[in-house]
Amino acid sequence: MAEAANIIEETVQPAVRRVVRRAKSAAAGKPAARKAAASKAAAPKRAYKRKTAAASKSKPAISLKKASEAAKEVAFVQLGICGKVYDEVNTRVTKARKQAPKQWSDLVKRGERVQQDLDKVQKDLTKDLRKRVNKLEIPAPIETRVTKFTKAVKKLTARVNKAA
Image (cartoon, helix red, strand yellow):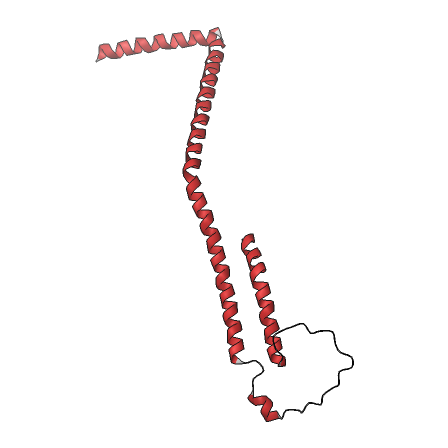
């Protein structure tokens, strides 16, 4: 978007300045903006006749032809901006499409490496956890209660089997 703004600044603003200068010069009845030479101090002043009100009303300040040319020029500038933006977007999309398969394969390779690292860490953690569990010492009173409970369960199951 910033590039589009730069394109607009580079192309539209000079064109707008030209159109404004032409419109001003046409309104003043002067030819297109040309820089005048240094003013002549000794030039005699001419007496101009004033135009009548009817004569000034009949002729528009800016001719229709010049106004339509200025409007066409502004339209062409806008179309040119759209064309440049389209070209820029199109080149970026084609670059992204060319790079997509390579990026995909790079991401797949990276994912495989991460999965291998995770598997290794999981194995190490489970080994460590098993070692810790095996090192745990269960107190004797709990062990005796568990053995008594299992014996009671065996006796009950034997009675149920006989009754059935």
